[in-house]
Amino acid sequence: MDHFLYRDGTLHAEDVPLPEIAAAVGTPVYVYSAATLTRHYHLFTEALSPLPHLVCFAVKSNGNLAVLKLLGDLGAGMDVVSEGEYRRARAAGIPGDRIVFSGVGKTRDEMRTALQGGIRQFNVESEPELLALSEVATSLGTTAPITLRVNPDVDAKTHEKIATGRKEDKFGIPIARAREIYAQAAALPGLQIVGIDVHIGSQLTDLGPFEAAYTKVADLTRALRADGHRIDRLDLGGGLGIPYTRSNELPPLPLDYGAMVRRTVGDLGCEIEIEPGRLISGNAGILLASVIYLKQGEGRDFLILDAAMNDLIRPAMYGAWHDIVPVQDGGAPTHVYDVVGPVCESGDTFARGRPLPPLSEGALVAFRSAGAYGAVMASEYNARPLVPEVLVQGDHFAVIRPRPSFDDMLARDTIPQWL
Ligand code: LLP
Image (cartoon, rainbow, N blue to C red; front, side, top):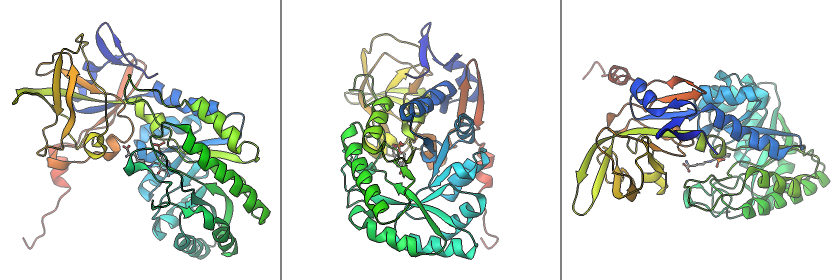
């Protein structure tokens, strides 16, 4: 359930009618619901209780400082994959000891920043990274808490571009070599092993692959303990999928996920960390856009919006489906539209042959399930201003990232004197 519902024929974000936001901020604009973010965070904390746990929100899914602060105030930790995300989490008030640092290519500078600023753990993904982190920690006279991210060779059965747990994927260390690499880690100065990490992919709609991976992690926990290592934490990654369409079969609920976690790793006495992004932020956001033109093509009608692939790239990049709904409830879907943006490539197509109620110029539409991997993946392609973001709570809203002016955009470039 989210908090984007029709009231008297008008789509609202919580208690705010979306036309009010469009009038105040303009379109396109992302709109997030604080109540939905809160609700989805609590689904996970409830699902994992009574195990000791920390829900580390994947900042990559939505890194707005206001979103991070809201979740941080509820007690969330953060999963970051770059210095930029680390700095975002800290700027939003998240203490270092609630931040885990993931990512396959952490630089020495990034390690230094996190070690100096405070970090819960690094999820190390390779032997060269172990050596680098050992060097950096030693040079700072400190110790880096680490897990090793293992690649369990499990097919997450998700989109090719977001599967991360098969042996051909670039992520983690092969689980078959884990004992050898843990021994290597234990022998290096400046490192302290605290647990194991795994993340097999995103938008998983079946618990089977998770269960297969976590069972391997449970076996590995026992083996590593037998080797003399302290395994106190298991970071189980993110990846639980969300419903992108009302008609689809529902992905498993966090409650079922939690039961599976308890079944597979619950008896090991470990603190459980998870790194969900999409399930917390995805259905907590919509992208609000306006119809610029209705154009009759050869045998098809194009609905040309003021939002484009630079604002929401998921359809162009992954062929992803987002429900598109009129903000004023227009009744039955009697028309079929190709929904497109103004960017100059055919890839800038959100949907082909989408049944919708009749829409006219100036009408507002909302892309549902756009709160994750929406604004964070936006760009200024075609010199279109970066899409702004708004947070709604109850009957009030605030702009949490303004649309830059054209002057702001131009002022970022410099022309060398010698030109
Ligand atoms: N932890 C790690 C190490 C990850 O790589 C990811 C996502 C997550 C957690 C969070 O996964 P989630 O719970 O959000 O599924 N841009 C793509 C998704 C890329 C996911 C990358 N990693 C999309 O729009 O579908």
